[in-house]
Length: 277
Image (cartoon, rainbow, N blue to C red; front, side):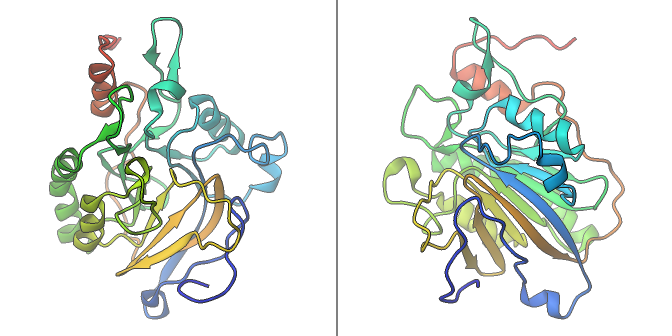
């Protein structure tokens, strides 16, 4: 129960449908989403995954998981995988002695982007990384840097609101917003800019990781304004309802090649970007 006193599901359990008030009035589409973050869970990294998760519509990666884990999910389920990088992205995605970051093949990096899922019409945006607390980790941001990333996304979000009646359906992040599902230490404190993002653009849901919850009595879902903010650590299977999913015109972007976020990783790590073929 969201906002109530019911006992929260244990992290990694299958969560039920999370309704929004607008769903009572508007026709909605229900999507089954498998979301993962922060660790490889053997209940997911399993040969039986395809049979157990056959009803999944898409997969969401909320950061700090190996590229091979996301590749396993897309190969096993044959569903689109959208993801953002976590604050340990360099450690978890690099390959070889030269340390070049390797992004998961066949998956779509939505960090700093706004894309539309080509099957459902779901509008998905992403904000990667965590608050900056160490110079050694490349995907960490100050509040100012997070504001600038949001500013680069804003034109597309505003255009979506004008053209489709909504700016965004699903926000995918690694860190939570400030004072929502976060913790007090600097590494796990939420972003103020992200909280403002929810106020301005009003996605139906935000999925995040980064916060490791082991207490079964602690809720992993918080409602903020019109958005359900859900901590998916280490995985959650969610039945989510989205109202007013309209027909879309553009297919989802692919991420076979490094993008701006990956370039930032290489720059901060002091590496040269590989030339595109």
